[in-house]
Length: 138
Image (cartoon, rainbow, N blue to C red; front, side, top):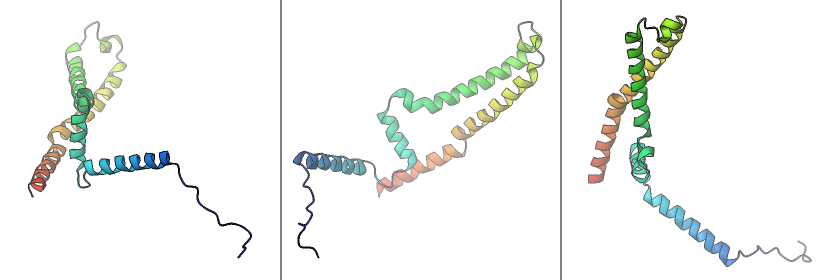
């Protein structure tokens, strides 16, 4: 052991640094307490939706609605445009395959949208809400 060198002493942080660290720790603690550990994803989304604006809360539903409208418009266009001179199919018959392909893709996405809102995901969300209500009663 060398007695010639003095022991190293850690630098003491300034009072402002200590105060800043205490404020950060308090903010983290408050955030942890405001969001319980057993909070489900659906509950978290509902809470965030209540705190955010109307558009942010409804963007999924608006996109789903737009997809369904676009799909039905494409079906209407193909069925009722027929051989009219202004129709894309009448002007360029080679576009038929492309339009049918786009319609198939839109139909697939529209099916997924309907399944999400009215199928098992809807039932799962209902079940999660029911379980959450039961857990809050206890």
